[in-house]
Length: 182
Image (tube, rainbow, N blue to C red; front, side):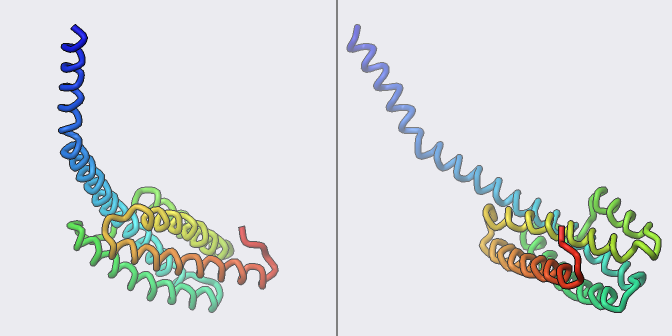
């Protein structure tokens, strides 16, 4: 009886182990598919974030109260136009439309800034952009660690570096003007 059980147990273990490589391959394929889907989701999100930045920059170019903020808005327009083109190309390569669409939350953010009276516009715009950069940095940092596409990972790494530089520069500017950056 013991022999039968041992053979039966050994046979079951052997059958389970023989399916191991195939099962491991299936898991690896599923993980790769999830990462590719994650890349596509990231690209859709990044396109929306970039579109919000473009729309805010256009708004600030029209409504900013200071020449410095108008100049910053112009720089944002140039930078985010280029960034949008790069994101769109990457999205198309990943099988997406490459079209930027803002989420309901992003549209609400834009509407909030747009609704500001002239006396509050510059401060609300700056705070909104600063807050957006914090969220955008987190989005890109996450993509650096999980991207399936090496080209997308390198793009995300460059964007992380650019955002960190912009955020440290914004913090220094706020201190120079006598304020503390949040």
